[in-house]
Length: 191
Image (cartoon, rainbow, N blue to C red; front, top):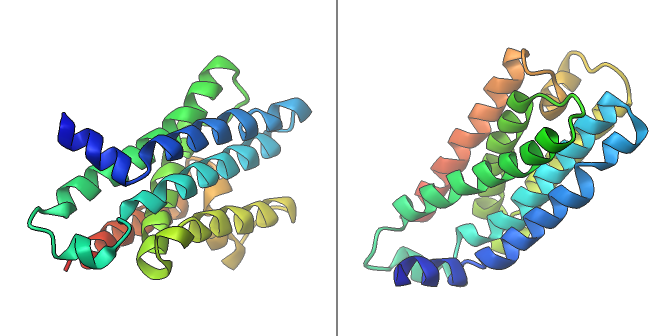
């Protein structure tokens, strides 16, 4: 138990969880105020991106070189950490959706959380812990612009994967690719 508590404190998990809950409570219900299904999806994507961005900084310690030279294997812990980020990022908007339905599919929330968590992990690997939030928030922002500009098709559909309906296979493929690449970025960072 002590090891888990120390890990959580060293990775800033309590503050990240508070931010995740705050983002879900503040952003997810905004779309319900207008009654627009598109805006409900957009706000749930933004809430998920902010939640993932807040938590992704904990995927690396204060000193990545120290993490790499540690005698313990970090990859299993980081894998659990990444899965927990995706689970919480999906679970919080899903809980709000269950309490106050707006028409956002649970599958969409899960797909977005998995893909954006992968992007957060990639962001930490490329930009460092303090800027790991950039990729998930940028992906959500681009998707929102694509959604607001009309029905995305062609190349715009690739960038708008978070706002696509649950039955669009390309969106699932992109999300899964980001998740897999994010895990690989974690694995590579531990070498």
